[in-house]
Each structure stands twice: as C-alpha cells, then as structure tokens.
Length: 128
Image (cartoon, rainbow, N blue to C red; front, side):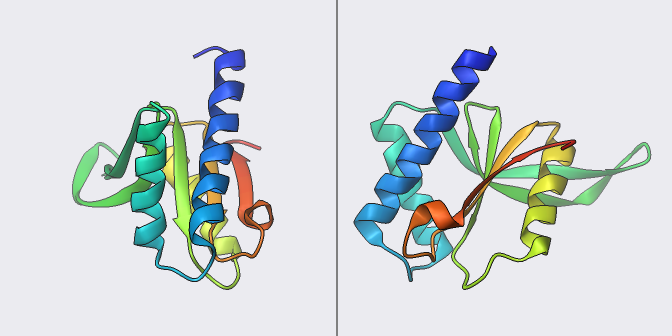
C-alpha cells in the first residue's frame, strides 16, 4: 500500500471511530464499540477483521500462547480499543508490542470513554 492510500485509510479509520462514538457516546463496554466499529467498516466497504490471534515466538519456538489484536484494518493497521477512564502508558506499550509481534508499522489506540473521541485517539508508528 502506497503512502497516499495509507493516508486515505487512516482518515477513514478516524472517521469511522468518530461516527461510532457520535452514535453511542462514552460509557459502554469495549466489546460493544468493537462490534459497532466492525459494522461501520462493513458499511464503508473497508476490509477489517477482529480478534486476530498473534502467536508468540520465543527464539526459534512458537509457543502455545497468543495475544489478540482487537481489529486489523486492510491487513495493515492495528486498532487497539479501550473504554477506560484514563489511557495509561501500558496501553500504548501493549499496542507497540502488538505492532512488533504482527510485523505491522501503524496502529491506533482509541479510548471510547471520552466526551470527545479526538481526546481518546492516538496514532502509533512502530520505531518512533
């Protein structure tokens, strides 16, 4: 995916998140926002998958342990959803780890428990 396409998709991701937040507001469970965001992506014809397993590799071994990406958009962008009072540094660290494990570069940490979604939206680029 070229840079211009990535910029278009990242804009669509933000717009879809704002639409979900505008319709639901804060105060619901993370799983509710996830389901609604998946529906919004479907309505916009954006390819997205939810609860994608990321295997854990240690040295040359793949362990019987995995983590799950909340949403993977266009097989390129990881979205980590939260519905918490305060986003903590560990939440960003979690997203960075998922980016490394999945070999992806760009992720979004979105906290729907804000009165204005833009206050709970951050973009993370692996390596920066």
